[in-house]
Image 1: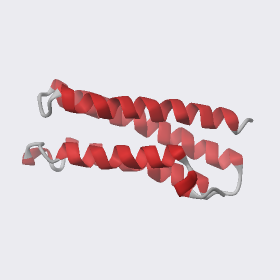
Image 2: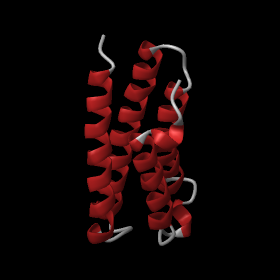
Image 3: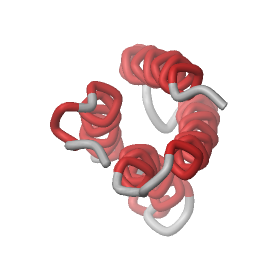
Length: 117
């Protein structure tokens, strides 16, 4: 079991979720139940799965939830890229968040590797 506040990856994932919510404020209202909803779920899923895994009893369980969080990070990246391709948000606003997502993906990989087999 891990203390969440001490996990750098969880803190970084929380920052991403917060920044993602702020990005969505400028989206058209007609996307509320479409892309906005999906992006929010993906963004929240990353720190949530890290937290759930951290609260489990074995390294294997933790690694499993880190894998789910990693999948959510790729989902979030895809949705943010689609958002600027659809001109729902400026690319310059999305790039910093995407860079943080990549950083979390790298941290996730390193953490999974450190947990061993």
